[in-house]
Amino acid sequence: MSHVWCDHVPSSRRVKRFGASVVLAAFVVSVVHSGSLAAGESGSATKEVKQTIDRVLEILGDEKLKKPEYADDRIAAIEDVIAQRFDYEEMAKRTLGREWKKLSPEQQKEFVSLFQRFLSKTYAGNVDGYSGEQVEYIKERRKGDFAEVQTKVISKKLEVPLDYRLLKNSSTWRVYDVVIDGVSLVKNFRGQFKRIIKASGFSGLVDKLRSKIAKTSAQ
Image (cartoon, rainbow, N blue to C red; front, side, top):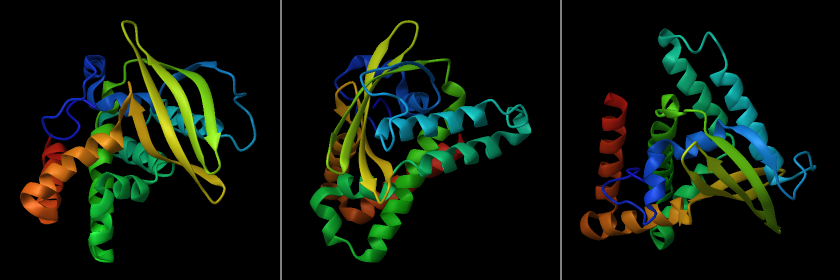
């Protein structure tokens, strides 16, 4: 994902067109097509992703929240909705790989919190970057408690494959990874985090996250 973390950009140049707001765009698009899986199929991961999209669309369509003085409330509402669909702990754990088990419970909790805040600032902070992109639902693949919802984000000039990987937690499907044009968000972060930890230790990664959050908040 372009410019999500530091200076690393995935191999696909097409992703640059969407930048940091591509994940948000996928949650606030108008549904143009449902593929081989029926949209209303009971218990489907696709259905739950669509439910999240509908809730975000309601927020974006709220005339009161469109007013400048309610900008923070608008972003907070979107963050809350998406937080209910994303499994930030699972995502954070996967970005650290083997390093996760080396951390104390307190360190793990701190990292999950920082990682969630960083992602939230990244996508919710780009809400005004949404410019009418649409999403086409291709199909859903499922194996046990794991599922992948394959979609395509469509703009006037570009089409980008965007797939959600989900894990069933109790009776709810939660996103633990997003694959953008073949590039895994989790794998992308894992490579970058590994390099930072190797150079500066886990404390260096925590400092880097805090710095990025502060910089994004100040913009």
